[in-house]
Length: 316
Image (cartoon, rainbow, N blue to C red; front, side, top):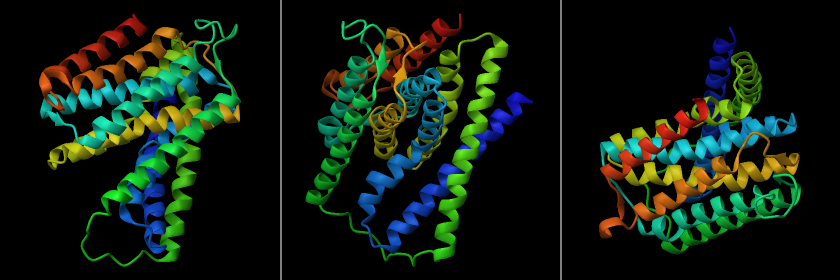
């Protein structure tokens, strides 16, 4: 029954994220917000909404292991599994904005996470924790990243589109937002509760469950949208979705969670945090191997192999 309710909670989270994103996009259309700004904000944050809900609720419940483990696992899943599998199917070409902005910002965010989460290693304190001050810093950096991205997109000019569709009725727009929020909140609470119960029954630490089961579940929107984009021949969208989600996970979601309640690392080890840095570093290296600005098939195979080895290490 716990597994069934866990899956019910996950379905509610995914459906809620979809409804909320559609409602927010419709609201932006009604107020004539340019499409490229909606893509940089609503869509990017919308695909990270499941992680946001699970981590924020975990933080509010003082369950830091799940709050942080969810982000660690999601970022590793995004790079090693989603990009790895996509690259195995078709090499992923990297754009100039990916190389100059998205990948470096993601790498910088992972380094910042490592510094904030390694108090004992860096002799900054006796307990590894991300405090409220660090959380606020992360949020400010995310706002700065969004501001820079919007300005850069504005300088390039908004893409030309076909005739705009008529906006959705007010009642439908508000209904999508309300139903989406309800699904996220209730589904997130259901998912978190039963994931914790399962972990305790199996004798597995909550941090391991968060890095594996919870993170894999909340990363399903990124997986689905990336595979669909690749199938439609839009590899750039698949890559951009993952890169944007990783930055949002580290700066926005951890920032909000730590601001609500300081996050103690607990069962999240230095190795787990270092793996997040490694994933960003390998992605950066992959962009320049053999002078090809792409993630090739053999690099995708290495990504998947690293993830399998890491998960085996956790659950062995």
